[in-house]
Image (cartoon, rainbow, N blue to C red; front, top):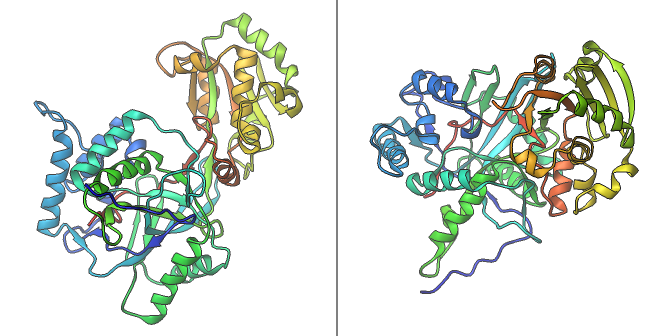
Length: 456
């Protein structure tokens, strides 16, 4: 059978779309029906979301198995529920294509600083990763979550939640437009369970010439440079697989919706990222191994020893902006604390292959130090010898108590990191490299359920 010829542009193609949204006539409280992305929902939170409202989007985005289910029944159940909600008016498709400006206002964890981030929900034409692609990746993905997302997408035919991309508008048009839109009344306004305020606007195409011009300018401005995926790599790769399967058959005319994906595009002026650090806690080191680790620190670091918890919390607990990327680390053992400054030249023989961006990352330096000084290499990491947390207090408490955060060996050493700057995420992706695991945690996550993208 004939196969479509698809040529991928070197920059992304961004388009308005007709979203599925909860009907305000059917749903009084949007906060009761939205949810975090599927991959950050704990088992306990899943139960809470299911109980919050029978129409909560988690029933579509993270359907649960029920007793006696045949294989894949939970995905088919989600598809049937989606159909029922569309039929009874719970979800309605907007009559005209639109871009959907979006704003999040939140307190940065560990601080009293309130931040606001703005972006645009849009459809973006799928492109495979690689040289010349308009979409760049910075993470490796895992087979199991890719398969889960594929089966859900195949059953439902919708993007229930967006991927998040970092775009740049060199003209300055997009940030100015987003700031202007934010002065108007939103279509949706809610505060989620984490205290994050979400506001959504609808910039409909075909009703107003000035707004049409603004939408075109936003698509062109953000589409003039490559977009770096910040979150949602599994969903993106799943969408590529789904589109490739749909593409087989007769030659395709036009641009099918299934060859596009729902994306929240953040622009660095109005959509600056808050990236939280992910601290490493080394497990299973006995007293002699901890002493040896401390004695060898000078091989790679300049060491300021003798810090108490107060100093360490002030330096790494989020009380300042924590720019990161400077090779600075905190250390805590039951002997006390220290601040470590990496001597980069000492790391050079042990750095992994790749471009300069990935080799200079703090998380790369941390991996080298953990393997060289504590003997915990990739195989030991895969066996669970490192636990991860975004909380300095939790990391220190694990070590003090000698608890087993992963249910196996006790915590021995906490290595505290500064956050990875967003510019380094973009630089690594531009080099065609991927970041080490647990390099970034972008906060807050884009909420699921405000807009759903039907692939039709």
